[in-house]
Length: 303
Figure 1 (cartoon, rainbow, N blue to C red):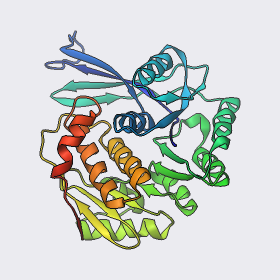
Figure 2: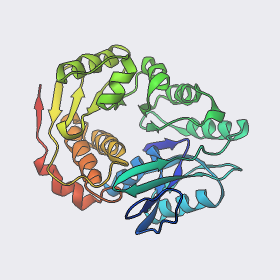
Figure 3: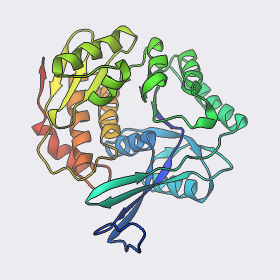
Figure 4: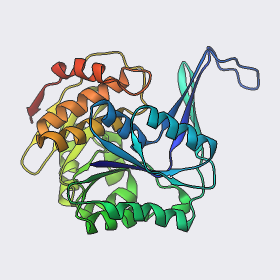
């Protein structure tokens, strides 16, 4: 079973206006409410790919109920810890460009934090846990370490998709996958990335620090998979980019779900790239038909 963990979910409230006027009345052209959070995005794509999974994390209030209702309507198993404060709302304001206003999220108490860690004690060696996104300030910067300790104790595998110190602290524990984009990789090592050779160089440094596989997304230049044996490149299918939210999460879902099912990292890279692109070409997260239509365009070659 694949489990996803979203510590700070959200309702993503997408609002589109013709021309944003500050200090004036603006009328919406279109609006859309979607369940948000990186792990939740992974769960939704896994479900669309036919991969069984369970969504974990913290939900609270009427906003939390909305998220859980949407996930259940998509036949996703949920096992969230209920919290007293409301789950946050993130505003995505589209006005030619896009302006984001993200909520801070609820305060998570110690009992609630313990309850989530306790759920992971049911893991087995056959399970994979996807840890995605930022950690709410009330949990402290080392909360992922706490969850990883339980995962390792139970013999399960884990994927971590976060940045900065939280990622660096997780690497010695041997994550089966990390997925920085080219900008995050540069920030992680405090360097300027000048080309593919640099991406491979710093991707290999992540392997040296403990990661088993490094998946680097490069926007229109495709993706690199860096392993101990080889580096592979996948091209990006052709299409019109309509949505930047969730493309990286979709790539993780396609990769992890396929790797768990087939054990083939190259097929996982193909499906991950098609899944990320399909979401980028959609208003919401990609549907299965869109992913399947893009798969034949994705070519994987050794570098």
